[in-house]
Amino acid sequence: MNKELLSAIEYLSKEKGVTADVICDSLEAVLITAYKKEYDGNPNATVRLDRLTGDYSIVSPKTVVAEVADEENEISLEDARAIDKGYEEGDEILVDVTPKNFGRIAAQAAKQVMIQRLREAERNIVYDEFYGRTDDIITGIIQRIEQKNVYIDLGKAEAVLPYSEQIPTEEYTVGQRIKCYVVEVRNSPKGAQIQLSRTHPGLLKRLFELEVPEIYDGVVELHSVAREPGKRSKIAVYSRDPNVDCVGACVGPKGARVQNIVMELQNEKIDIVKWDEDPAVYIANALSPAQVVSVTIDEGAKSSVVVVPDYQLSLAIGKAGQNARLAAKLTNWKIDIKSESQAEDGDVATGDDDILAEFDAVDNEATSMPVEDEV
Image 1: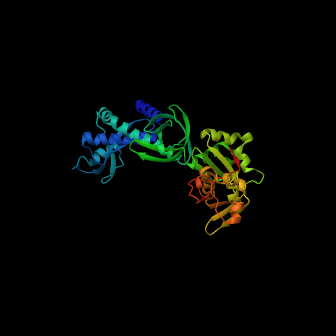
Image 2: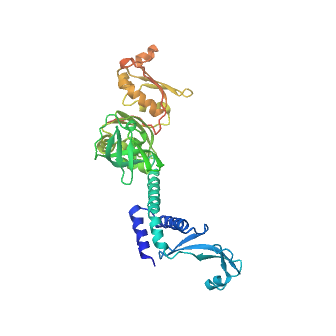
Image 3: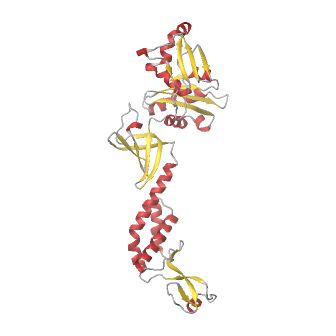
């Protein structure tokens, strides 16, 4: 029994997180490569590695013949029957051809190859692990910041938070613990390349799933999310159980649940609104906290005209059109906002800086959410 080999396999398995089968497969490949290179052996030779005892041998297929003409591929009937009396001419048997000093040569030849194969296996394991977490939230520690890119230690791998995926109002420091959204995981010769995001709408969705048990359990569902990272977001939710208040569940006792998310996103304001299958009601909810007098919709053009009280016009539009723009993203409807007096006159409302309160819905990758409670 080769106890040293078994111990080495067990140690590598624990140290590298690679299964013993993967190590044994790599070892067999290394041994046969060393044999063929060093001894110019039979190209059909294979390795037998007993995974219980650790014993190994090189075996080569040979045909049983009465008179040997090719020693590499043939064996005499007499020699074959010395192995097993049941062999007959024409039988093909596996013969042990392990050289006497093969152990020392194999060890030297195998060392570098084994290291390389183990690294490859380790990289594949890490890739598979993180690839399964694509579109999920992950926590890491900021390791370094280079050329505005933030590199985050995830334990088994390093991920990058590109400058384009960072929230403009946030500051990052080495050693800071941070939650990010896994956008993409690619396999490369250098290992898994993981790209993270703090601006993706999916981050907000996953944070609510973590904080709100009703969402995690499926009782409350996030219908859509609209974000302007670092500034303001809207989420639309609805309840599958009529006895559960979807907005209240997301806000939490004394606002604790949503406040935890606001703190994680560095004080990004979050409006939580109730989704409704009636587009007019949904659009009115999405414009919250502004009050809405009426909503007229055009199903074909997927556009709407919303009338609000005169004193609510600037609130409905929002600073630089932010509230109306997020509502359009959330609902995926075109929203034209008018005050009551403008509706009577047939004029289109304008807000600060002479911005028209008309916004085309923008495709939203994640989900949309309306506004009922503003934090």
